[in-house]
Image (tube, rainbow, N blue to C red; front, side, top):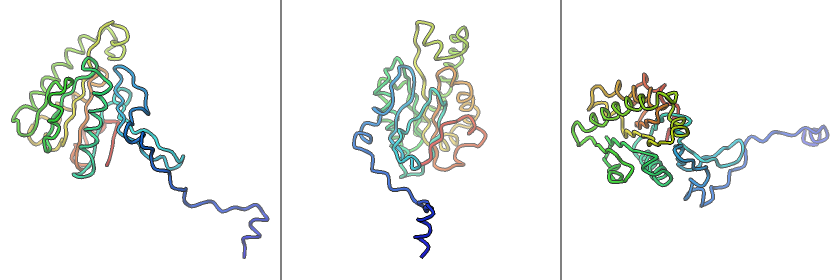
Length: 232
């Protein structure tokens, strides 16, 4: 009974719900990397698309290591965490040569990242079944970080500045630890050593991605070192 009065006064009810967003186009799902620009030595792999409900659009979901730093990935078994990592690695290897990217993969889950063990980008692979191997990888990366600090000193300790100004190239380094909780249990000094890499590595082109099943699977003391956070 009040509708005519409201209409005569120009009063209109706000919609409570926006209309559904159309499903992503096939090319957005199958070839998400086409949605973002590929820049040499800049790591920004596209994982897929997500819904921007307020603006009724789809936006590429990326992991901006170069501009955003280290990453945390939370996802219990069956939520797609492994698919996330697989897609990320394939995207990175598809668009960056081994001269631009070196991978260090520690799989303390089911060991399925061994599929990338023989890829030309992969410098080291370790799993929970390979006793002591993860610790050796961390030790090797700690040494590499020390060497990079010396090499990049005259370029302000800045990897991108070194790439642009030196006339030389060294690859980005990406350390992936899948199921960090299991890794930490097998390596007593893990928290300190990984924290050092995450804290000091980004400006030297060294990035870390840790995956965990729950929020407390990755220590709260090191979480502030990771600015890209994904929850599945």
